Image (cartoon, rainbow, N blue to C red):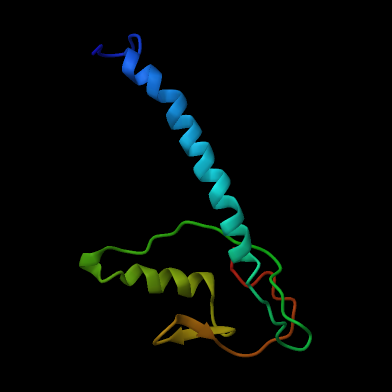
Length: 110
């Protein structure tokens, strides 16, 4: 067997097309199963007017360490979702606060 970037051994070369065909078959069979599972999802409108997501926010922030008990996570969420419209919640970390009218698409503090 060769080392480094040398030529592929004969046995491996013979198995490569078989591996590609097996992977292709697996993906082809998994596709319809995933599509039919997604077809079983039902969405029910909620609220008046009907609530719907308006945007997505992705960010990175400090959450702490095991030795700090992840204390920084609470500090970070309080900065991102500040009072009075959000309040500390014992089960959620940050929960709803004072009600306020829309728009809600800028809830997360920049």
